[in-house]
Length: 485
Image 1 (cartoon, one colour):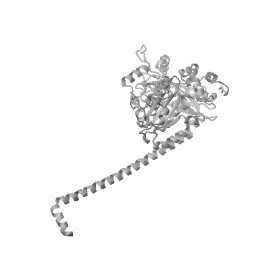
Image 2 (cartoon, rainbow, N blue to C red):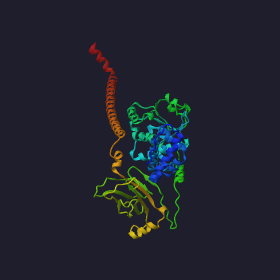
Image 3 (cartoon, rainbow, N blue to C red):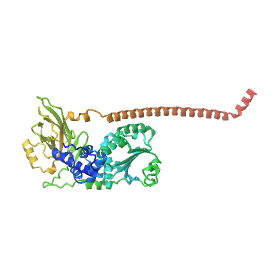
């Protein structure tokens, strides 16, 4: 790999050209084209402004900018950013009106508005929520043509139940690592006192130059960044417009625009789409096969006279039987058992990948997992081989897994960073604080109930006494006067 040396006297224009050339040289040298989306590579090749943004983001440090290009483009491929669009998102996320575009700031930057009070942390929807946030960031990127955007995070009316530290960290990571020089400000509006300790820890995660972009504001100070006519009334502004989410028809139209049209072959069978859904734990290809692990095969370093096995788990999520096939580009170093077979609907199978003794995984080693739907689950192996040779490529879904040594991934897999430790500790503190608040609320409610009960009984006794007095008024006062006078 060619490592550039930062030259302080270079202009930004010279640096962005050097960034492009060095990245493309490394790409041609390593041959790892599959690590990136082709449209992102084209952007590096042809978009000067995009390359300059990496240089600006890293303050003219070419080596750091080059590292960010590689990290950002790999992330865009692994997360599937190019497939994030309105048609692939739940309508309910738009209808919640928790995240949406809202006017512009004083510098003309478009604003993403986040109303924290409408957010509820739900781990089962975390992936979709992140895709939803990325959708709006991508929309702003398209609108600004590579300019900057601002985020207003309104905490008005929010409590601990609305605080999602994982989402906040994800949002910050987007602008730190994947969207170069695209953030103008994150304005935190009306921060409740109960959330302030959490934000102090979050700010401690950030580099000094990034901390300056996060500003805590109120109805007065926010006017330094956004004019009143571009702020909602609840933030001290004069704009009464409300965000209107897309309708069900809008969503259907968006889905129709993004879904590839499938044309039946001569046998009347529609080819499967090449959709790939990647999560942290698994990948689903073509809507028919679930693959675990998602992106990498992690091997231990083998001893001189022992093999090293890794298991690939395949699950048929189609309603039909499927046939799978596993191939590698390094047949000298690996053995695969079984490499070809059939999985009935709903069934699963384990594939053993064996790293032979004396070999180590190389950066270029990959396994290709392929799958297709079939009509006859009883086909013999010779017939299955014949079927694979005659099946058009557009009916085959596939996905590549990379091979790595576990020691290369130890820091990211087995060791928690200080940020992750702080995040977990903070979540524990918040959970404990929530529990204590609930206990105090319960005790307070119990005290209020007892006080209310006592007050009601006192009033009742007084009422009964007065009632008794007035009912026996003729005898009460004469007897009282006789007794004391």
